[in-house]
Length: 359
Ligand SMILES: NC(=O)c1ccc[n+]([C@@H]2O[C@H](COP(=O)([O-])OP(=O)(O)OC[C@H]3O[C@@H](n4cnc5c(N)ncnc54)[C@H](O)[C@@H]3O)[C@@H](O)[C@H]2O)c1
Image (tube, rainbow, N blue to C red):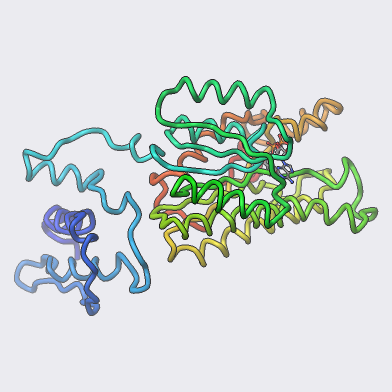
């Protein structure tokens, strides 16, 4: 039966869910109470609903809440404003995406998707440390550093040469030089990756070395980067950590007529790595998700598309939008996943493929 006064119930629950003071105190272990309906008024027993919600919001093993859980947002804000004239009303939705004061690392940040994502996170207010192979960053990176300086929003973009396949090097860089020196670490985007073994090479011909090269960068490197970031987050007491691995739609589908067994296998591995890390790290307040892009024009794909324009036509015609994606079309999704706007999203893969996977 529907409650006759749904609003009363909603307000009561919303007040409970969003009150900062409730989460500041240790949560009492309440016994589960069934939602009882009053026989006289056919109305839910509000106290019982309250207790039920309280019991369900956090498991007994969870340590703390994310920043967004503690805020009065949306409907709860509307209800609070209705009963409290002093409550200041303002649009909150874009603030939920804010990364002001957050510190992040982005691997593969010298160009392509990594650099684009680093700039997006800086625009949202974060200080980003980009990691990549060359000793000196690219001219695009220098232009982006100057651009971020001009934003004057407290963000910064810094470059560190490193090889993500070197576990001890990446761990000392991320933990000792970035997390400890900054005093915190909140974000990690693992975008470093390679396509391989070699263009057009059949899996019948792969050597051990070819196979291992792809796995070393796309799997080992992603793991070492995210492991170091997670350790840095735990060590510095991060309250709302977010790790985003850049997988690929090729981890879930096989690109028609592309002999990419090694690459596709490595990206499937990234999807499972993220799901499993998400399950282990939830109790540390760290969320782990993947973004699976479709075909985007970057240095990686240009190596193929510039030589074989017909492949570009084939890829464009393989999605409902009828075109390749552009690097900036991943700005929103990475900022959403990095920020509190996605605070209940973990262990998820977000496909951004122009609908390629739908056909
Ligand atoms: N472009 C696409 O269509 C597409 C689609 C799906 C997924 N992806 C994935 O997105 C990520 C970024 O790719 P991109 O298209 O921007 O390619 P890109 O080649 O432009 O960028 C990849 C970056 O990773 C860096 N890198 C490679 N090996 C490294 C190592 N050992 N240590 C540190 N850095 C290393 C490269 O130097 C480069 O800057 C990759 O993981 C790729 O698999 C790309």
